[in-house]
Length: 401
Image 1: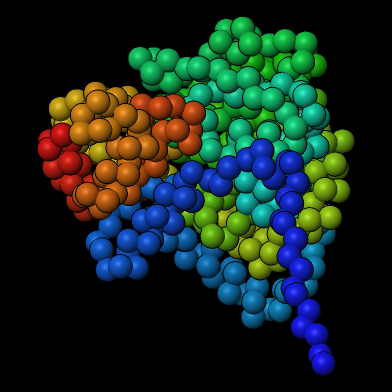
Image 2: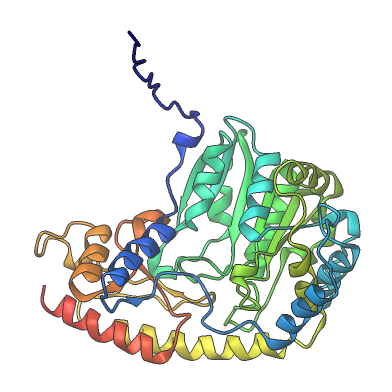
């Protein structure tokens, strides 16, 4: 007689650190909208922080040439010397910085660069000052490595601007890192150069690190493009993280970089050597073309974003009950929708975002993912026609509450 073995099942036990974090709120909103599209529903999607422009032709041509030239082997972990030189030259030309090859590491997107830097700087229990509203991944990156986020609440009536005085008020002996993101995702707020300089000076004096996320540095509408990378006298206490994604409409290409002290960049490169290794070789060639060629395409896109910004903010402000600050950079509007709480069972920004999606088929991102409870994020990196469709549906939704 043969015996049948009963399958043995074991519970899945994941690490404590992975359970500290949540899935990206932005990606969750994109996925929910996609489910409706798969059902044949016409969704107006203003969730993703992704330029609607195509990657410039000369950048695509460089990638095609790299493919045809069989540039498909491993490269040095932190990028080719050609790419490092292009990153250094571009930043020096635009901001007056003076980095060396050993002070730059190219990574698989700006998000990867930020994760690397936070991983090599933050120990368990270290405090990290993080302005609110914040980009969704900052908090979870810090929590994943065991750090503690100290949230800096900004003032909506002041355009969510962060000042040096606000930062200094949260510094304690446990402060290890200050994260700056200007222009900001999701608020579009821009720190003044004076405040950024003062934060870096303060950090330098007290032995605190600063990360300046420059993902949107070229989408600044104040006329005052600024990078802390220009502060050469304080360079031993800050890191600049940049990305080609928004600047050159290269989100899917995945190329970011870190500029900073050689010791930290060396640690970042070591960590990367045990995770992704080098960024895609072909993308590196495309990045060199983007960085070394005329920057007129960047300015053309910036000017178009200003028109789109003015249009969406004007449209949102025309909806009774909706308040919206004027973003000074990036490509997001961050309207306050709290006037509708208590109506039709709505009690949060998540409820509003859910209603907009499932009743009027407008996909937004609820503010809870960015640390606020009264807002939704709208990306205006889309066509004017798409914004008009979104506004029409939003007027209908809010008008019916």
